[in-house]
Length: 149
Image (cartoon, rainbow, N blue to C red):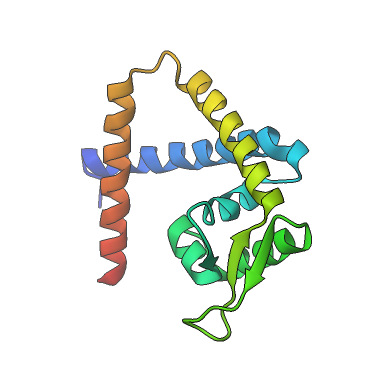
Protein backbone atom coordinates (compact mmCIF):
# COMPACT_ATOMS: atom_id res chain seq x y z
CA UNK A 1 0.00 0.00 0.00
CA UNK A 2 1.19 3.53 -0.79
CA UNK A 3 0.51 6.84 0.85
CA UNK A 4 -1.93 9.17 -0.82
CA UNK A 5 -0.50 12.67 -1.45
CA UNK A 6 -2.34 13.85 1.68
CA UNK A 7 -1.01 10.86 3.63
CA UNK A 8 2.56 11.71 2.58
CA UNK A 9 2.11 15.35 3.54
CA UNK A 10 0.57 14.34 6.87
CA UNK A 11 3.53 12.04 7.59
CA UNK A 12 5.94 14.87 6.77
CA UNK A 13 3.91 17.19 9.01
CA UNK A 14 4.12 14.69 11.88
CA UNK A 15 7.90 14.51 11.58
CA UNK A 16 8.17 18.31 11.50
CA UNK A 17 5.82 18.54 14.51
CA UNK A 18 8.14 16.22 16.44
CA UNK A 19 11.11 18.44 15.57
CA UNK A 20 9.12 21.55 16.47
CA UNK A 21 8.07 20.01 19.79
CA UNK A 22 11.71 19.34 20.68
CA UNK A 23 12.70 22.88 19.73
CA UNK A 24 9.79 24.35 21.72
CA UNK A 25 10.68 22.35 24.83
CA UNK A 26 14.32 23.44 24.60
CA UNK A 27 13.35 27.08 24.04
CA UNK A 28 10.84 26.96 26.89
CA UNK A 29 13.43 25.50 29.22
CA UNK A 30 15.86 28.32 28.38
CA UNK A 31 13.11 30.94 28.80
CA UNK A 32 12.15 29.92 32.36
CA UNK A 33 15.18 28.10 33.74
CA UNK A 34 16.26 30.98 36.00
CA UNK A 35 12.76 31.02 37.55
CA UNK A 36 13.13 27.44 38.81
CA UNK A 37 10.92 26.04 36.06
CA UNK A 38 11.14 23.68 33.12
CA UNK A 39 8.80 23.53 30.15
CA UNK A 40 6.95 20.67 31.85
CA UNK A 41 6.51 22.61 35.09
CA UNK A 42 5.44 25.67 33.13
CA UNK A 43 2.84 23.61 31.30
CA UNK A 44 1.34 22.31 34.55
CA UNK A 45 1.33 25.80 36.10
CA UNK A 46 -0.42 27.00 32.93
CA UNK A 47 -3.23 24.59 33.72
CA UNK A 48 -3.84 26.58 36.91
CA UNK A 49 -3.91 30.11 35.52
CA UNK A 50 -7.72 30.16 35.43
CA UNK A 51 -8.11 28.87 38.97
CA UNK A 52 -7.78 25.70 41.04
CA UNK A 53 -7.80 22.37 39.25
CA UNK A 54 -7.30 18.69 40.00
CA UNK A 55 -4.51 16.65 38.45
CA UNK A 56 -6.90 14.86 36.04
CA UNK A 57 -8.35 18.22 34.92
CA UNK A 58 -4.88 19.66 34.30
CA UNK A 59 -3.86 16.52 32.40
CA UNK A 60 -6.93 16.70 30.15
CA UNK A 61 -6.52 20.43 29.51
CA UNK A 62 -2.82 20.19 28.69
CA UNK A 63 -2.85 16.82 26.86
CA UNK A 64 -0.62 15.11 29.41
CA UNK A 65 -0.83 11.91 31.42
CA UNK A 66 -2.19 12.07 34.95
CA UNK A 67 0.93 10.38 36.29
CA UNK A 68 3.30 12.97 34.85
CA UNK A 69 1.09 15.84 36.03
CA UNK A 70 0.88 14.32 39.53
CA UNK A 71 4.65 14.05 39.81
CA UNK A 72 5.16 17.62 38.59
CA UNK A 73 2.31 19.06 40.66
CA UNK A 74 3.73 17.51 43.83
CA UNK A 75 7.17 18.95 43.03
CA UNK A 76 5.65 22.39 42.37
CA UNK A 77 3.98 22.26 45.77
CA UNK A 78 7.28 21.30 47.43
CA UNK A 79 8.93 24.29 45.72
CA UNK A 80 6.19 26.72 46.80
CA UNK A 81 4.65 27.42 43.38
CA UNK A 82 1.37 25.69 44.22
CA UNK A 83 -0.71 24.72 47.24
CA UNK A 84 -3.34 22.04 47.65
CA UNK A 85 -6.85 22.09 49.05
CA UNK A 86 -9.59 19.50 49.48
CA UNK A 87 -11.67 18.86 46.39
CA UNK A 88 -15.41 18.98 47.17
CA UNK A 89 -16.10 16.90 44.03
CA UNK A 90 -13.64 14.09 44.77
CA UNK A 91 -12.28 13.11 48.16
CA UNK A 92 -8.98 11.66 46.90
CA UNK A 93 -8.20 14.15 44.11
CA UNK A 94 -6.83 17.35 45.65
CA UNK A 95 -7.22 20.74 44.04
CA UNK A 96 -4.03 22.57 43.16
CA UNK A 97 -3.84 26.35 43.08
CA UNK A 98 -1.13 28.90 42.41
CA UNK A 99 0.46 30.44 45.50
CA UNK A 100 1.33 34.15 45.53
CA UNK A 101 4.86 33.09 44.52
CA UNK A 102 3.43 30.95 41.71
CA UNK A 103 1.28 33.85 40.47
CA UNK A 104 4.25 36.22 40.48
CA UNK A 105 6.40 33.72 38.59
CA UNK A 106 3.62 33.08 36.05
CA UNK A 107 3.23 36.85 35.50
CA UNK A 108 6.94 37.01 34.66
CA UNK A 109 6.66 33.91 32.47
CA UNK A 110 3.75 35.53 30.62
CA UNK A 111 5.75 38.71 30.04
CA UNK A 112 8.70 36.71 28.69
CA UNK A 113 6.49 34.48 26.55
CA UNK A 114 4.79 37.45 24.90
CA UNK A 115 8.15 39.05 24.07
CA UNK A 116 9.54 35.73 22.82
CA UNK A 117 6.50 34.80 20.70
CA UNK A 118 6.41 38.26 19.11
CA UNK A 119 10.12 37.91 18.24
CA UNK A 120 9.81 34.37 16.84
CA UNK A 121 6.62 35.13 14.87
CA UNK A 122 7.99 38.42 13.55
CA UNK A 123 8.17 38.26 9.78
CA UNK A 124 5.71 35.36 9.54
CA UNK A 125 2.38 36.35 8.06
CA UNK A 126 -0.38 36.34 10.68
CA UNK A 127 -2.82 34.70 8.23
CA UNK A 128 -0.35 31.89 7.58
CA UNK A 129 -0.10 31.26 11.33
CA UNK A 130 -3.90 31.26 11.62
CA UNK A 131 -4.15 28.76 8.74
CA UNK A 132 -1.50 26.53 10.35
CA UNK A 133 -3.41 26.64 13.64
CA UNK A 134 -6.63 25.72 11.86
CA UNK A 135 -5.03 22.70 10.17
CA UNK A 136 -3.37 21.50 13.37
CA UNK A 137 -6.65 21.84 15.26
CA UNK A 138 -8.54 19.88 12.59
CA UNK A 139 -5.95 17.12 12.65
CA UNK A 140 -6.01 16.93 16.48
CA UNK A 141 -9.81 16.67 16.45
CA UNK A 142 -9.67 13.93 13.80
CA UNK A 143 -7.13 12.03 15.90
CA UNK A 144 -9.34 12.34 18.96
CA UNK A 145 -12.33 11.06 16.99
CA UNK A 146 -10.28 8.21 15.53
CA UNK A 147 -9.26 7.20 19.06
CA UNK A 148 -12.95 6.60 19.87
CA UNK A 149 -13.40 4.21 16.96
